[in-house]
Image (cartoon, rainbow, N blue to C red):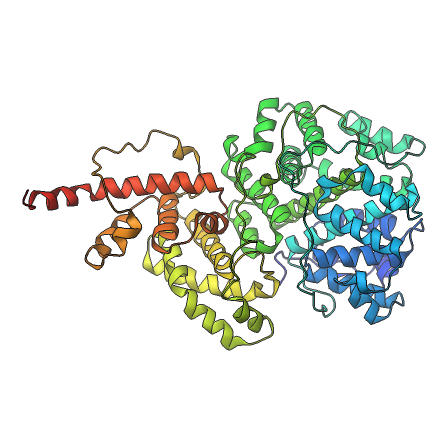
Length: 591
């Protein structure tokens, strides 16, 4: 199941020995990183500092936070690991099971319930954390030292969830069932500003660690100054910075800073965007360029490979449920080695860690933020001003029952899903690829990927939209492998002067209506198939398969404005191409 190859290491490899001491075994998530052993060493040290080191919180409390956050993220790997660890620590299985979603009915103390509520909010909606959230925990008797540990453990939970998804880690133990809970997400904020803090007091300055930051990046970010109550964790984080960010032998420093910038923008972390914009400036990158990378890197004149790298990091950070091995294959197709892919995964996970810590601490900005960040930036391929498609509201998914049967092991139900959706998948793929043989091959790949990943399907969108998204990603990957490359991603042509309609007869019917007429079906279909791929697939999904604008946007990973723009342009192209047929017909009509 792992997406990356590994290499054998000695059983006496020091980080593995340390991990056996911490957990009683070496978790699979670390065994998958043997291509870059210094990553394992740094992560093991941070795990020790955050989880194992004695502090204000007990180990059981820490593992309870990890389990609750993993369940909220619906991360099977992390749920299995933390569920097993709690039992090894002596927690009864029934109590551990209640932490997966029903902890409010688990007989916990009010303090422990409040602690888990805070951790889940911080993990999923960090930009909404305020001083009042910390004060609420303080009212339950948690000291600033304990609050800092809660924040660090929650950040570590986000790190592990991101890392396990990016690596394709299979669970070390059988995973318990995660209840189909719906977490409350009531914090609708249009514009994100830095959360004003700091929320906690600081301890004495850590001269050695601070000297490291001054030497390597030119200043000591307030994010790290705010953590001096836990100097061992601060030292371990500096070690992660040293081996993940500062080493230049795999991805280069600018590539990694861009990942930090883009993922922080996705997470709406204005503090980290400002910090890494400043660091990129110190590396000689123009301010205008860094701002464009944060807002919409596809308009920043990056190389195709660097765009693909940021696509990868952004999807891993913002849409883990849709992340799959095909995303790793995409990076490989752009020339990235497995070692570099591994570093990109670790860099993305560490950015999520740092973002979570900053949200929890409310670290005071080191530099005045220049950009306005919006939650919509969490969707791949959107600029900050585009609206986010969602399917959380609306009629029930008609495939939900069949999906549930497949997840329980009913293979016949999957056959039903194939029969039900094969036409749409085929038309999506032929709309992208324009070739029946390629579309047939890609359709088989699509259903295979869907079957492999259906266990992780969470119902956040309709099954049909999720399946169409897999089909579009599969088709797009094949398209990118063609020479010369035909792109579905380049938005620049949507505004250029390459197409100017010259002969368009007014229609009383749009392409969808025309398509429905049997005698003209073949003509319109042939015309649509001749469109450039980026317009062709939108017209196919909207006008032929009758997906809504929101469903089309979600399936293609585009913003709603981009879908509308491409649909209008595609329809205009179809109309112009068909205009001679209307003119010929008009000549034979008596007036």
